Length: 286
Image 1: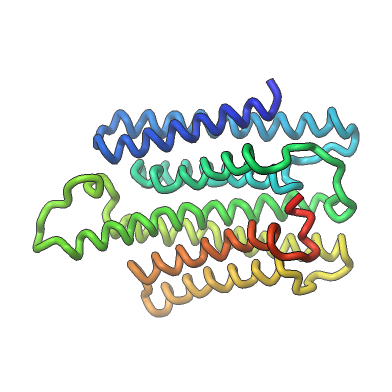
Image 2: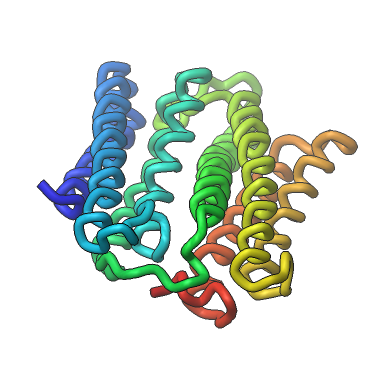
């Protein structure tokens, strides 16, 4: 079985997990929630195996020039899916709020579908700029940060849906329907904050390792390349989130909107810059 087949199984498992999470929202059945989490974990294991197999295949194809599966857009997208599920599973260990999976798994599923349907899965030799261990450190830290921001975005959407419904209710009227299995607004706000507290230092470390890599590849730590500029914009958005929370007590709706805006900027930094703008990082769109 090759990495492509393992990635296909991963996609199927993530789709099944997402559907089961939606089924949990509809049925409120805890067994369904448990099975959804189990299927998601199985998909994560296949995703892990697929990444490992692709690493092995790179040595089969390229010989001594084999490398970690993180160097082109296809590999980064499937790795992004892996990191999203990893962060979700870690947060689930603490909060055990399975409804969150219905708003996080679509990010992982669409990443896998996008990679499988539209991106080149070939294993090609690295361009000189990518032949550095700094690449691995940079990509891993950045994408773990991106994944934490994806989880924060998912729970922020949940928060805005739930708080909007609560504000329309009268008095202590009991929440019914799909929203009855949502975590409380306080818990959703806390998960949003915790996820960004995970992602922000990882993004910071990713920028630092990226600067070290840039110096190795191009002889300068910073060149205001579009990718570097947008990374800095994303960093400032989440820095503003944390600053506002610590100094002005920003919680709730304002924090949720800033989290969503931050993830939108993150996606543009990741995909928009690679696919739309030109620069030193343009090879990332290959």
